Amino acid sequence: MNAKTALPAVAMTAVSMVITLAVVVMWLGTAVPWPVALVVGLGIDGGWLATLAYERRLAAQGDHSNAVTALGWSFGLLAGGVLFAHALTAEASAGAWLAVAWLPIAAKALWLVHGLWERTALTPSALGAIRGIQQEARDEAAVARARLRAEAATEETRLTAVTAAGARVARVQARTADTLAGAWSTLEKARAGENTGRALTSVTAHVTPHVAPRWELPVWGPTEQVPALDAGPALTDAELDVLVDSIRHSQTPALSYREMAVRFRAAGHSASEVRLRAAWKRVA
Image 1 (cartoon, rainbow, N blue to C red):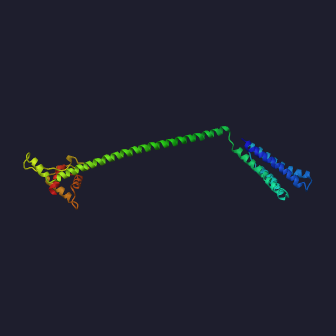
Image 2 (cartoon, rainbow, N blue to C red):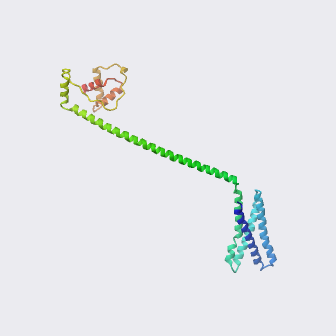
């Protein structure tokens, strides 16, 4: 794994050292004897190589020295400066020399990347453990997503079923209410008919002479809780008439029978529905 970053850094360093040495010998060889230029070039490359080797030794020991690192970058910048100066003063192929003048800096950058690689490298077992943890997390996330989708589908099915059942119940209630309303209307028409009283009188007169028939519509609607029969003494017809009349006229306009009955029972009074309705008729 280290070869991925070490080999490019070694190759770049070797090329930059060769070019630096050649440039120093060619550039300074015109001003000083070539052995002196060769010594200068080898000194630059040697100092750079020595600091690089010491820096790599410290890195292998898990240590680091800022002074050595600064010295190595100084030699790299010196080599790069020599190449740039030669490229700027060269009369021929200045562009080609400028193209290779960045090689020392690039070599130092590659060694920096290699050092970062080494400091962050992990063993195959650690990498395997990390991959296992990541795979386990992905599996758990997939299972959680599948569970949520299944629960959402189940809830959607349940809500659809409940909604359909509620709609059926509402339709049945509507039909029942319509039927009851029709029956109530029929009863009301029969009760309000002109010949109804005479027909009932003709029927009941043979059974109980001189007794007028009493036919009231059934109570249809919510029922109120009737207090216990022993909640108080039974009211006489006169007392019941007085109570009904006072409750009926407790509000203007006068209360209807149903409103009066609700207030009568809410006040704690007790009377059967037949007696209460009879008292209502007497006072109304």
